[in-house]
Image (cartoon, rainbow over all chains, first blue to last red; front, side, top):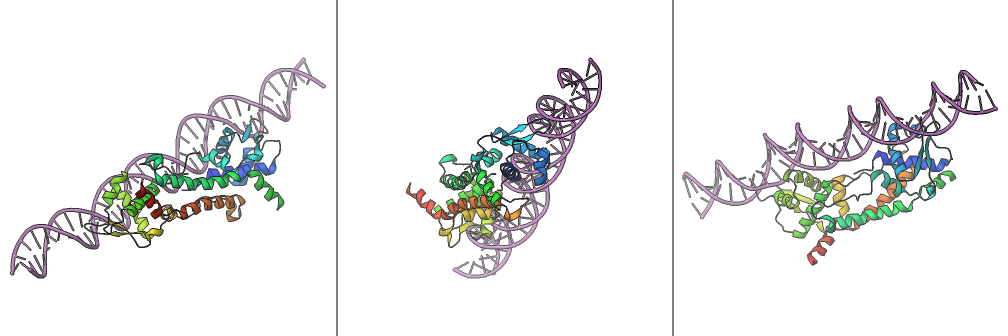
Length: 131
Length: 131
DNA sequence: GCGTGATTACTCGGATACAAGATGTCCGAGTTTGAGCGG
DNA sequence: CCGCTCAAACTCGGACATCTTGTATCCGAGTAATCACGC
């Protein structure tokens, strides 16, 4: 079990956008270069963030991706859920949701999600700009 | 990102062994039937638990798998680590361990592991026998 | 100067290729139990 | 009754086969800014 590279790219891209915060959209190429990933693949991932309402895309020349309003409230968990989906990490195959094992696993997962929900990208950006 | 089916099988098998607690080893076939999985595949998974020192295997007729000493201390995390490995869920590809994003992700993961570490199979078995 | 059209620089989405890991099967080898058989 | 052999019931481990998912590329289509040109 591993977080996908896509999640890695998405988190880093969001952090970059939050740190930059220009009104101008930033092109996929520029975003992709920083992370050494192909622009087309990154674009695919960012489409998920667009559908989740975190960023918006601008077509045409000087196009790219830009933060949307409430960007200061975006948490790690928001981004991860947009990329990885919101399904729980563990499904008991035989017993379904009544399974005690499953209940414990989901409780543990909740602990992790709680931490990720409280961690906002904008907070992290502040730390960086202090350095 | 998902926990593998193998983890599901391993957790259920361990719970079954803890609830049963006979000195006699229990055959793979019996264990596999309960979970509707092929014996050979389950055997592969249980081999990992053997190497991790949680159970031991007995060859020959009336052979099978049996709990080892300190079985009362076995936690969910022990089992999961034996099956899934101990690598962290998130690796920042570009920046390595200094990456702030990675640090937050690992901190979140720690929260989940802490919960799983405190959850012992023997405790869960008690709850079941009460019902 | 000003509209109009062409060019350019982009993103979007689907189709497709590729790789890796999870899942599952097969089989030969080794091991223990227990039954059968001969002394 | 004892000991030997042999068959049966197991696990073990490696080598495959298969399936799913993540990763990545390619290309045609659409869109917005900018430039060129003609009036």
